[in-house]
Length: 270
Length: 333
Image (cartoon, rainbow over all chains, first blue to last red; front, top):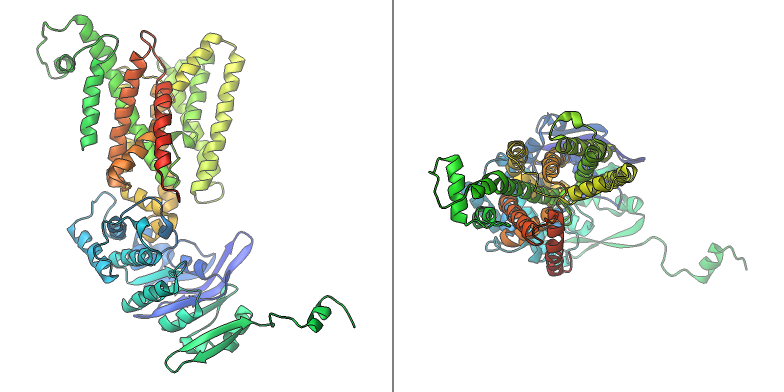
């Protein structure tokens, strides 16, 4: 269990987060949503020590994060980061997933057979058994993202954080990756851009706006037009097809301005 | 493993090579005579004994450890700054060593330090440069790859300029030549008195790098991945930079600024054993030793009886190798 309360974060002269709070939920997928620059990734980075908040507290279990070594944090929290996905060093899938076991071995210890079987099991869980010898760079975006998740599984930390795992993926892979995340039944926090994906795959949502969580609750409560419109500044409509509800978005002002509008905007009068 | 054997074999053969040829067997017997008491044979001359034991063996041993240290330093820095073009001298340490050496050669600064004053001044120069680079790279918080490169390059330029100025002010053609020869590197100063210090210093550094081999894998994948895997990238980078700088400081103090080995050895090693540092660190070390030992043979033999600076040999041979490697890199890299 990981909980952040009253998180403030100042980077340079900008307040990125001001009083944000977030909590993981046992066995559930919590989605972190919000417009660009609302502080989603920054808040996630505070949860595993990548960024140190200037105020507030992050608790991992019952321990404040500052009292834990980086290794202890990693034993509790596994992260699908954005940087390893575009790695250019030419490592194999098997070696990469095996690195997830680093938290359980001393620097000098080599990985043993247990570690290797954990890594292979993790690859099986993400449907990539047989990929261990492949070069990470040769994989498709969706496969690579599944490898990132396999590394987290191999790490065996009870909480998993994912920073925009559907970035750069086409629609099919977006669903594939998130369906996989759901099927793992882990305590998960995922940063998502796409609100329809958040609606479909998350049990609980936290909506960030200008560095604070302005609303949280089940997707049905958070993904309402009266909640989203002021935050995103666009028109939001819910469309139901019987089984699922979808969100449709449009600009608040009509795209094609009438000639009257144009004249008004440019200050002409008739 | 194979590369290590190649390195050892290279050393044995290289000991025999030079203006006076000695067969590897004789060379081994002479070494055996001095170390484990193999009885003296009539088949080798007294001069052979002196050449092998007093001149060539220390030289080859120095070449091997310096080559290993440069290879390991190259691999480490490439992982630390996530850039395949990083090499041991990018952190400005060699420029610092050169400034120290130039001050000692041209102005006799530090002559109170004894017979090895040039080496000692070079080492002090390397430490000074390291302190300056760290101060600059850390001034705004955690050491990141770009901060490290910029700080290293800036300090490198500053100290190179200082060295040039020292040469100009000294106004001594003889001194300038000596500094030049030193800057380009040479194993000619190898002797039994300085070897143990070099082996101890560089050996300890390489052991630590190998100890932390997996941290290098994680840092090469990115700071966030390292952090998520329980490795503090800032602190790890700091420790490794200091260790590598000390290694390079020892190497440069004992043999001058030998270029290209630290860049070429890691690249060739990566082609042979892949990017995982468990294999890459030892392979780059062994290849560094092979390259430097053979470069020194070429330096001794190419223009007999004159000796070329070894940096000239590694540069002339290394540049085409590097160009060939770069041409083979994937286009998206």
